[in-house]
Length: 554
Image (cartoon, rainbow, N blue to C red; front, side, top):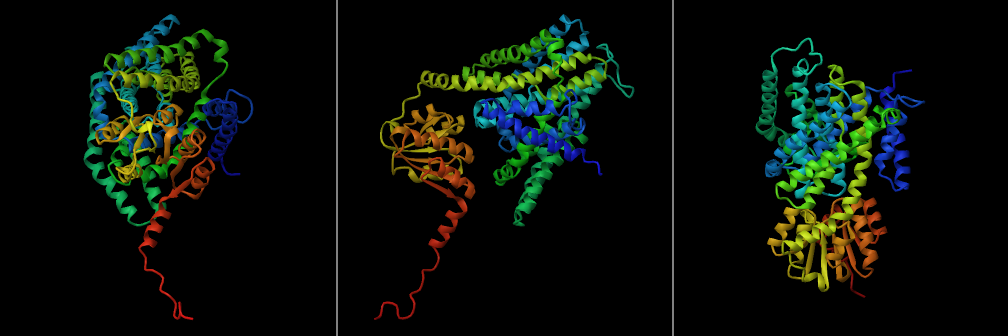
């Protein structure tokens, strides 16, 4: 029989993740719990089938690449520059604080200075996948808070790339083994790393900015959806791999820049839609691969050290981030979102811990503690976000009240309610202007502010939350226009709206016949597919049917 370890790893990983994720969801637990447990079951520390230990992390890395590429598609260079004043110093100070706490615990455990530095660095960097999934589930990526979190993440990513290059150069000084091929000093290693990162960014801004959109447009003009999808995936994976192989930056950072460059094309939304299924599937394999690394016996062998590690990640690091964001005079809602987002560790932590062990800097116990801290913090993080979801609406309302935001006049009378101000929402809003009182719900802070300046009565927030719908006067709305692109999110909004206001006429956008069925099932009066509406518009302008000969004569 042929070697089928790749197929077996994918089948076992996705199959078990599906079963255990469904059970976790039924028990009202985060589905991540099921994915992680699936990894533990196919890992080497539990009886039964053991998945390929080398293939699983590589499959997981594809998930990280596609996820960061997707974030880049919704993130511009202007967004990155807009948050640099808080993201750069914030991330640097937070990394320093977490590293110091990790070093303190290492000293208490009797480890060397070098072990403490590696351990502290591993605890300082948040997981890309966990953070982005949490932000995407809450549609926070394009909000002001989300942009700071993503900018912070990018700075952490760059800092870890630098740490991975400098650790071998510093290994001898820190009490470990320097690699045999090590040449040059620390200064030279630092200069080369910075030079490579600068060269990569320059290459993407000068060459990538011209080549990537050009390729996409050429392929789009062929009319082949299959070729377009393939082009998007080839660009995302190719740039990520090339950036790591040629410039020494991480796969994730390379993919992020590829997405950010592609975002400048008007085809970026289509590119994002085409890669979504693969992003989700490989992100699941990421969590399975983490579970495979975990030895549950560490919880019994050293419970105090595990709890101390978890406390540094969830409490110490989060408090440091909270204080930093508040020091920059940002509102408490932003500070809490950033601190909860960073209260976990992931992929870079494993890479750092593995390098530390190979350089004889970090003991095996240190790697076990990093893995235990990652697993437990990833399990705790959704619970923290659930707590935050309950806390934030009242906090944001008080912040708006304190800033003098006036109550909405339209919400107190019969009116139309529009959710989402993208391309579809904008067209609807312009069409309704002057015809009926209108309230718009938009969760992007900057876009909501622009709407207010344009004269639209606007509620800032996510319409999935009942309190946001109520604040927008849902009980008095005669028409509800749901223009959000995600059909499952739209369905949740419609279900709540229909329960709160049975007489309201609900009109929603859809992409497929399955979307139409889902939206109507949850309470939509009408669900419109773009292609069908275009066809109706074309037919309305078609030649009228000619009367047949003799018609009308008796």
